[in-house]
View 1 (cartoon, protein in one colour):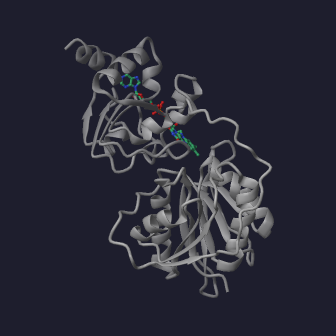
View 2 (cartoon, helix red, strand yellow):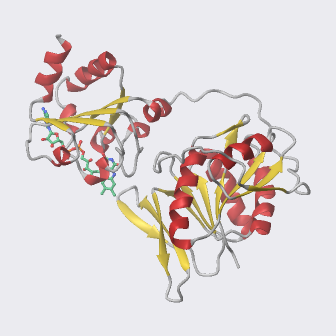
View 3 (tube, protein in one colour):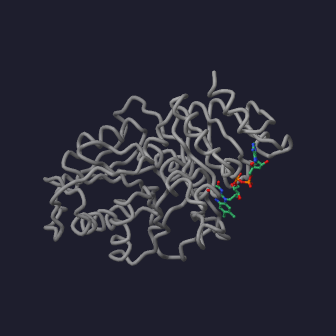
Length: 327
Ligand SMILES: Cc1cc2nc3c(=O)[nH]c(=O)nc-3n(C[C@H](O)[C@H](O)[C@H](O)COP(=O)(O)OP(=O)(O)OC[C@H]3O[C@@H](n4cnc5c(N)ncnc54)[C@H](O)[C@@H]3O)c2cc1C
């Protein structure tokens, strides 16, 4: 009988990716209802170091394969080994980071195991069947990001696999380790890969800087008029903030999609968020979680954004920005 909530512990160049701690936190939420063990799988050149980090995150069972080489990007070979691991562990669900690596490896794993996989969940909840057993409700935006759907894995197809967007769950905090049961599958080898990495080019996209920025300046449709966006950029520079935006900002190509904040975009947790000309639709504010200080500027004093902001300024953003920049 499939049992356990298993997290794929993605690592790169010997370091556990921060998203792993977020998925452990999601798994612990599921555990509160299902009571299953929280597990993790590691496949890396230095599996011991990664396993020790997972132990400090409070994972109860860790299953590891020492790859014996850096197998970054070798998803053909890695997916074969991970499929073998999952057959032995037999978890009821697997949480995978919705990263290029997670998607590429686990779409192949799903084929090998003959189970489904839901991509890009922004929420994972637990449902109860009539017989009292549990299933995972895999919530995600769909149909061109226009509707929010719940996907359920068909009965009998285990494990229930899903990729979960980075940034959605608060990272599990580290504690003292030493409690996890760690098992190495020494007989599972990472076979030869048809993929050879010739050169690595750092990504140009600055999404990472928004995710880690302490200050984020968010522009909404109100910024689209006149030279308001230029003012917003100067303001962001002055306060040392990264720029994010609402969907209309992306639709009008003022900012790239990977700077959209919200249900179908990024989830950010800056210390300070200052938004200009944003109405405060739930699909947008869902992406601003646990911001310590939230300031909003909107001409409409009844705007929904004032329901989530700590401080509001019912004023024209052009006037506010011009006056601030003149200081
Ligand atoms: C399934 C689904 C998923 C979605 N996902 C996302 C998502 O991830 N992110 C997202 O952002 N949206 C998302 N949306 C769209 C969302 O519902 C809203 O339409 C969108 O967030 C509105 O953006 P906005 O606040 O910039 O524009 P508007 O709602 O048009 O608001 C503009 C605001 O600017 C104010 N304003 C205008 N001029 C000025 C001025 N000069 N000074 C000050 N204030 C001014 C106005 O009073 C108004 O409140 C999604 C929608 C759906 C259906």
